[in-house]
Length: 188
Figure (cartoon, rainbow, N blue to C red):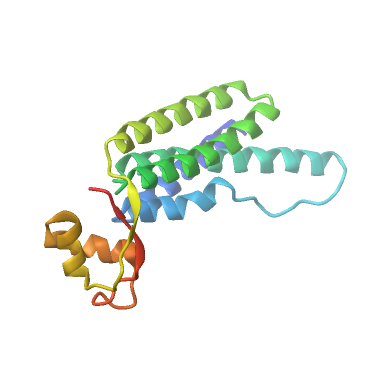
């Protein structure tokens, strides 16, 4: 029984690591790993001893996969380069919420070791993203009187036309020649 559970545990780690390594962008790895943190196996029915044993195994297997996905998610969040303070704060909130959810399940099940490990992981992720986000520029709302081309607006805001692609990505206009009258942009 123990050998089979060890094999499954290793398979969970292998799956989540391979999924994270298959992406070139840490944002994609985060997007793909988040659903694995909450995935639930097929519902089992019944009320006898066999159904109870199956439920215990199902819960243990789900917990194992969730923890493996959370570890890979923490690694992906460490590789992710936030573009703004708000971006880092949003990622921190998302990843920490996923870790908190599994930590609560572990605590409710009486699994103190998993709970403590997840709390330590959460603290490390929160500290990392807080530290990296602290010195990043803040997104501010830019309001203009007339619609301007993105190159002109990039030069007006930053005195640097090479920042135009990130400005277009942030403003998300229908066409770069016509930025909206109000849009988010990096403060510096």
